[in-house]
Image (cartoon, rainbow, N blue to C red; front, side, top):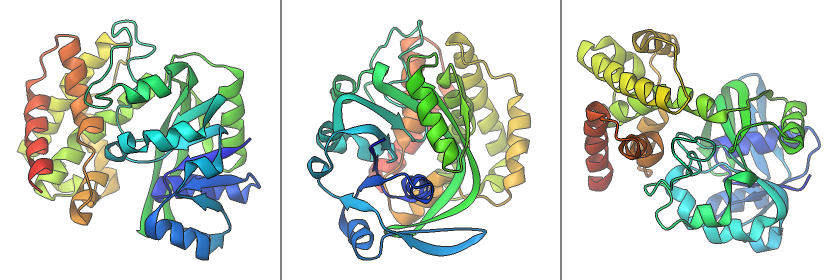
Length: 321
């Protein structure tokens, strides 16, 4: 397959490195210092079990030079996505499938959920550009259970976890989904195929939509959030709202919210991705992790006061940084 990865950060770099190791050619869309590093030394990759190595890779800041692909893996954070639409357009051919390896709720999430009738999520796709370019029939969703860091431009480090769940945006399983899952499995990932990827997205969102915003607002690690009875209670109340909304759209969550909090303690003094972005001065994934959830609740006339209040605080933080 001709594969291009949009975003050569921690996750995009890790996926590219695994594919390159397996002998699968990959192109990377990158820019700035990252692109310079990729051209001069290649993609730097290391893990807890291996020393850093540099892998030769095709890279460009012009998608037109890469041309249409069989598979495009989008591995950027939500705030960066809208600006990439012109570049994505150059990578899309008549048969191209797009795999979204992103945090939180994606812009296509309402596809495959009858109660939402493919309504557009305006906070994620305000002008409808993404929906126009990438109809849900061509999209594969991914939920990644892995942690990677980006210590320097063009350098990625795999910390832990290697599992990914893949599924069609419209549900069901088709030959392309099977082919992509086999390819990634051969590259060293533990791949699971889901016939309803929305539920897998919702489960991962369940923890991210609480600990990420609270950590960004307080600079606290997850263990501190859970050990404080009031912030722990806030997380439980937001997760309870997500559990109730999930039940309405077929994304039932059977675990107890308090038990999910306790499960997160196993990570120890863990810094969430949003806290890391705050400390690095990067844009925050406000809408993917919380804004889209509140918008979905509004579309279904579901009251989510705790989530709405947390979103308001997070938006003020993001706007005033």
